[in-house]
Length: 148
Length: 122
Image (tube, rainbow over all chains, first blue to last red; front, side):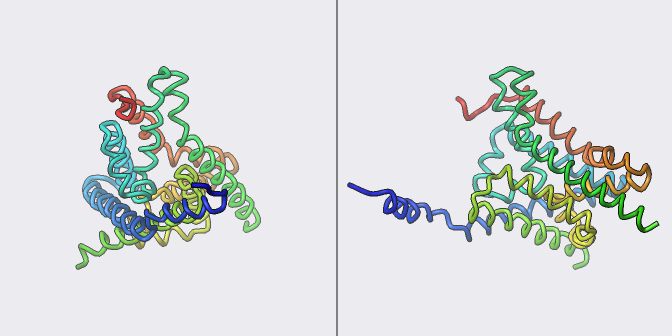
């Protein structure tokens, strides 16, 4: 079958619509919401013996631990395939990105393999988070100086 | 009802933040890595403006669990350090506030790499 570039693109786009955005959004909403509701439950549990800030930190650490463990045993990818952004956006997605980058690089050794590639996704997140924070800090500092 | 309400709002707000990301992934060509970076930066900006705090008061873990909450934490840490130590806080506040999350993710990530084999490669 002869096809020029444009008609092929139309053909491919028509086929690609098989993963509808609406269904993905419902899945993302349900999985993302569920993770956040679990986090809320953990927070209320931890607040029975910790201050609010510490409880919040421990909730993050718990979710990071669970996500890393599920990544290691290979379950996380199977859930993420259905959940899409539902598991990506909560802190579980950050943990999965770190753990799977580290796991991928295992064959390349532990220093320049795991040690370097563990930052493949974590690096940009930390870099731009801290940079944006620093810009905000300078602005805040100047504003407080003027307000005095 | 009062006991269920915080869970319901956490579910709805957390879910909606995920839906926004899902739409961005489906409708634009943003990769998951760019979504993560955008969410953290958005969290810093919203946290800096003081908007995100209201969302957290309202939705609890629904606002702190998504990565925007991580950005909010960075902005909050920097603001507190700037108030305490002046300009030096700009450099010390952010990583201090995010330390637990970063350290936990890195250490658990390394442990996973040590303990497990990559299933996809077999």
